[in-house]
Image 1 (cartoon, rainbow, N blue to C red):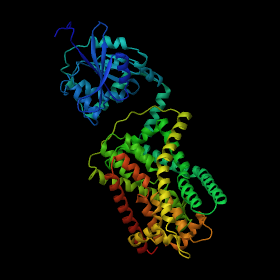
Image 2 (cartoon, helix red, strand yellow; image 1 turned 90 degrees about the horizontal axis):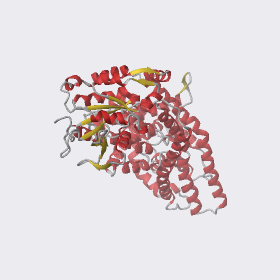
Image 3 (cartoon, rainbow, N blue to C red; image 1 turned 30 degrees about the vertical axis):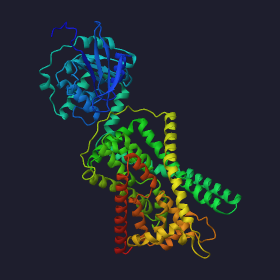
Image 4 (cartoon, rainbow, N blue to C red; image 1 turned 180 degrees about the horizontal axis):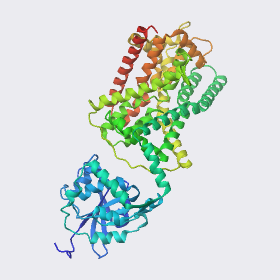
Length: 620
């Protein structure tokens, strides 16, 4: 085909990593001359338009989905691989490839660039977003990069239409002959490509600002495989300490407010069903959720700050190595971290995990993270049976037991993930590639909006479910009415359920009151505390029992093995109907939520029993 043939290079394709600015470049080059459809057999969009060349000719320009490799790990990457290699039926391979690189993240993008160049096809490099690179303190040399790659390199800023004329001119002049030596030159292993990318990026950088040098130095510390995890876990320790310390006054204020409204209703309304419904059902149900909202907000504040500052991506990168050992990737880290506040937003956050088996496994282990709803149960039991003794400078025995409960949940989740990934969710760790965002100070407005959105989602999705279930459980506890002299708990439907549960739970050390507390605790874990208080005070004249009264009752009536068994139960048991409901919605059916409930209850029963029998054997 001659060089003057007007039909040569009839198809041009934009290819590159995600977030390289391909779509912005595609829009700038085609304007309104584009159409969108789907590739055959998949839901991935096919974006095509007309590219006008300086000589008056036009070419079809295709915006390929972003890819990190031709070894496809997602539907997007599979589409890109097939189209570039001409494997789509009726879809010819592109004649010219425009390789779009992010100038501000050059080293990462040059890894995939070598796979593209290995094809030996006519290729042009668009060194995009050079303005952002300059903002970050980088001055680049396109000529040096062009010499290293062996193809033309054109600096562009797509959103400002800079460099587009030069790019189209180079595309029009691209040679049709293949580079026969490219396969040999660029046929490298992944470690070799990463090393080559590092050298090419270093050779293309003329100068760096002080800020860029400082940020690079910070990353050397924070991403160090030995120092980085220590800093991460230290930061998480400080965060959780702050969550509990800062939330206390707000939680107390909310609890006091709910109590004041309840007292007002009690004083102004006549005794009867409606008053009991409002005080024991509505206010107690809503209060059991609202009282923990400060902890949720504070934890999400730290999470949002970590995300906005650029550290969260680095934390996920650090956790990828650890989680790969149990068959997960670093993308599971953020949903599991969110589950420490509440498993509901944690499960919802799994939508960002592209691998279906990774996502399913993360959903199934999210309830094992120690959510804030467990804290009242832990605090009451620990205060009742664990002495306030110090075992070292600044280390109390009660705090150590609480820490051990958190560790037990984390270790249990990792072991379960390993088993699931080798059985029902079988598959190898998918791993992931991510770009490290630049460090920046979070914007107060963005933090406020993010906190409001997350607080509203928690109240709307969790609070509504818990509210409805609490009302149902209150009715179970209130009917049928007891005869004079008979305990209302003994006469109620819930009491009858407890009578049925007690023979099953007695072998692992549970008494009747504990068995009964598990019934309302299915609404939310923290309801177990109020259920125990109600159980011990149902026949008392004063129905308002303080938390310290519950602690005193437990200290007087429970043995240490029984109390430890109850703690072990709540480490594993899925005592939260709202979490089960969200798992059902996220998995589109009852199969996996049912599996989750069965295996968690089985773990709870086994470990509670082992804890009880072990403590008895040790004479505790």
